[in-house]
Image (cartoon, rainbow, N blue to C red; front, side, top):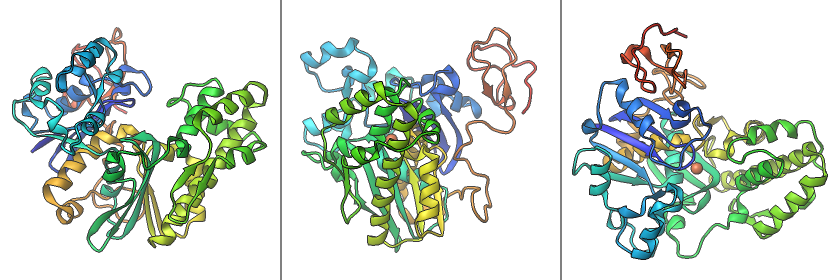
Length: 415
Ligand SMILES: [Fe+2]
């Protein structure tokens, strides 16, 4: 069964599986050369995945989609809403919001899957599976382990109205601790946006003159050169309860206004160091409390927050763990694959899903090669056409033409 996973917001991309075997996973940014490219249907990434095995969209048996924004025409008619149809993709209508508006847990009751499949060249009538954002993050991490007892923690800017989640794998069951589907669909938000340390990090990235969701790594680098002089003020913005839930105590607008005021006058290094310090403290305490209440010796993490390598180092050094696994595609770029894994879990149940995992090459034994980061295979090379605007990496052995410039693949350089 050919299963295609797609993510459509920032860091859009596609992942193609033949049941549990990952065929390919491609981030749109790799093809367009625009970092974190997205907020649209990633046609190039989809076709690139399919080309690896010479498939077409008609060969896809299942399509997995996020509950993000799609053009208004795929939702139940409402003339006022439809006026928005000329707006960019991200400003149109969200599946999750429509589910809540219509008080349903079934996304297919608010989304015209038949029209969507027809418009995008897929076979009529194939199943369309909508996945939960943080569930997909967590499954991506778990799939590349051989653990039967573990804690899974995810954290990011926001996904399906959730900022952080925890799940426990024990006794053959995967259970939500918090941040699960109930939190996504709660009428009143269970998690306050002010509680998101990842959003704070994105905000300081912008306040320091960089591009949020793109340049957080630069803030991380600056943090090493500064002193956390403003950490006390940011520390008071958050608290962590005994269950490990993070609470935000100041309005986001207040916090961000103070960030901008400080950033205008104070050294960028000190600002970066202050926020980095607080993000580490809050996250360590939150995950530590979850671990204390749900004892486990293995921790899997995913979500954009865990692109922060200093935080990951602190987790590894501080928490009483035997193993820490940071999913390599921890950002939303990993959600296309996570969405497929979500479908497989729903189709087969947990036991078969666990038995079909591909242990990542990290840590001890690994019978199979990790596919978690296999967006570029060892056979990759550059497109040799001098006029190709991308000069990107791709796999010459699997196709005769470059999927960007459509010219014959003549003299690729193998890496
Ligand atoms: Fe995310």
